[in-house]
Amino acid sequence: MNTDPLKTIHTNVGLLNILFTAGAGGTFLANMLGTSIIDPWNNEYSPTPPSKTFTATNEFTNPCSHIAMVWHPIDLINTSTVNELTNTNWINLIITPEEAKFTKVLHAVKRQNFAGVTKEDILYRLSKESNDEYNRMHKFQSHVVSMLAVNNNVLDVKFSDVFVDGNTDVILSMLNLIFNGHYHSIDVVKNIAKECMTKHDADIVMYNELSLAPEKWIDCLLAKI
Image (cartoon, rainbow, N blue to C red):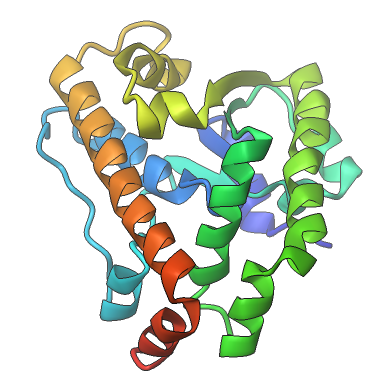
């Protein structure tokens, strides 16, 4: 699998990169962090889904990819690409095996901009039969991080610290990968914490709705595409 050359070029600039298992909210986090770096006085920023379909799945885009680039472990399956990266900043967003059961479901439905998405495809990705595929991606993240850590600056961050607890010290530590301890917009940090927890609460609602009536929910989603 070839890595997007624009991603590799961006990474070599040495800005912020977020590595996360699909469904774990890395794009939303990148959106919040990137905006806080560009506009450190905006302590009321709240991302907006770009369409009705994205709203239905509580999904977001990242307009600040030039500041905070997002990566899935599979993006770095090419070992030679990883070995070429040096002195760059990475946030390793970690999920537990139990959290992976939750994020796998989110990943199954947050694929609305993928070509050829069907009801059968989504239902398969929700099924137990797809567990192995997702678990391999989850485990592969650790392998990628072990390679990145050799020549790059990697900060391990727990998914729960950001999206469940809104830990401001953890969020501040992510920003200070770039600012070297000099980021002081605490109200912005508190806003990031609030928005991440709000997003997670909405994801839980969607997860519960899918658990009760997946086919009905998917029918409503696909009608909006």
